[in-house]
Image: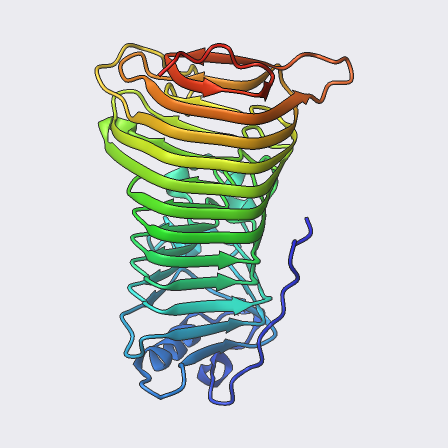
Length: 389
C-alpha cells in the first residue's frame, strides 16, 4: 500500500547519540535492547542547549521488550529512526516481561520520533497461537507522553495493535504506513484512549482490525487524509464494556478514503455501560466496496452470538454528523443506526450521502434505524427511518 506522502529522513545532528556507540550491533540476530537502554538513558539525562537526539543508524536491530522511561531532563527529545527494528521471533523472549507491550515510552514529554525505518512486530508467531488479545503485545505504546510527534515510520505485523496512545495530551501522527494481513487478529493501526488534542493526517493503514479506534476519555481527535483498508474502518469505541462509564467527544474525521473494509464510519458501544459519544463529524469520505459504510451499533459484542438482551443503561450517542460520504458498499445496508432501547441516539444528521451497491447485479443498498432520532437529506439511499428530534 503506497503512502500518500513520501517520507524523507532528516539529517543526523552532529551531536546525536548513536546506539552503536553503546554497543548495539544491528545485525538482526544479537539482542540490542541493553545498548538501546544505555543510549536512551544518556539522551534522557542530557541538558544541552540543542535537542538531545537518539540516532538509530542503518541496520536491523533486534530488541526484546524494552521500556524507554521518562521524565527526561530536556523538555524535548528526538529519536531518528533510519535503521529497522525487529521483535524477537521466539515467544520465550517475553517470559520475564509484561506480554502486553513490546516497545514502551512512559512519561516522556516533547518526544519526536521520525525517520523512514521499519518497526516489525513479527506478529505471525503470535497469530498462529491461541492467545487472547490481552496476551499478545502492542508494538509501540505511549503512556502519559505529552506533545508527542510521530512521523515517517513504517510499522508492520504487530502481534496486537500497532500503536497505543494512552493518557497523552497533544499528539501529532503523520506520514505513517501501518500494515498487517487483513486476516490478522486484533491488529488495530492506532488505538487512542484517555487522550486529548490528537492529530492524525496523511497516513496509510491496512490491518486486520480498526484502522483507528478511539476509546473512552478521548476528545479533540482530528483525522484527515487517511487511507484505510483492509481492516474494520474508523471506530469510536468500543465503549461501556463491563458496565464502564466511557466518554468521547469532539472527534472529527475528514477527507479520507476507506477501501475494502468490513466497516466504514462506526460508533460501537456495549449494553450496560454509561457515558456519552457526542459532537462527532465525518465529512468528505470516499468509500470503495465497504461492507457497512455508516454504522452506529449499541448492541456491540465481539463474541458470537451478538448480544441484544435488555439492559438498564447505555452510552448516550448524540450530535453525530455525516456529510459528503460517497462511494460503494459490498452489502445491502449502506446505513445502520442500531441505538439502545434504553437511551436513544439523538441529533443524528446525514446530508449529501451517496452510497450505492458495488454489486454488478445492481443490488439496492438500503438504510435501517432503531430508536434513532435526527434528520437526513439529501441521501442515497433514502434514510426515512430516522425519527424527528
